[in-house]
Image (cartoon, rainbow, N blue to C red; front, side, top):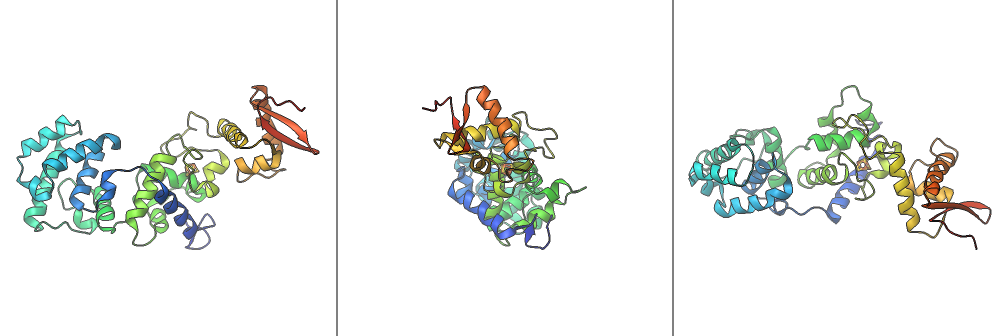
Length: 313
Ligand code: SF4
């Protein structure tokens, strides 16, 4: 995935990409209580619960579970039937997960003296803990994991980097780990998973969420928002309709804008005479004008666009 040097991705300095994403994450992200803790037991419970349940619904169940069994020792001492009954009554998916969690708590108590192992490989020795969950616990509890590579992260990498999109068999793991700042798996994995879950969804919310990678994102530049899990263009239309939306949003913040200024605001690869240039922009504006949303006029010998049907008097 790397470009001309180890520190570049598609020609962009990796430090710039990292800073942009972590700043975006720090400035505002969804607040989940397990993001406020570094207790490996609490994090393990949240990870196991999230495997089959939407995050919003996990919050209540997670808090109730920890109120019943606040530590691995408490869970290990519980009657397994009670744990399974809790799982069912909170609609948390397969009951086996409750049994495995109970078993893992027993292992921690009896085999590890109450201390969680810190390495992803060791964590997979716990019952029901696969590589993904082990890495999540190592990252969020101990800041000691590798880069998470799940469906959301793959979608982000595929959309942002042309080199990933065009590879015959993209090596997501290597790329994701090269992107992650060394020793910062806690914030990095939280940030890139947030990007995939909030901004780079199946129907991407690039502008709405102020995605920090728009400037470099291949999908954003080209309007092609397909991804490994989205083989055809998302239903909302990633190109024409999206750019029309951007025009309206940008113009709503200005009385009027010269065409080229507008072009640069809605598209980072806008060049007046290029493929996505003035002609392309005028075509979109003509659609919007036909719907009465935008008017194109002249001001000081240059073409300008404004919202609505504006009189020239
Ligand atoms: S700009 Fe859009 S497509 Fe690109 S990473 Fe951000 S949200 Fe995803």
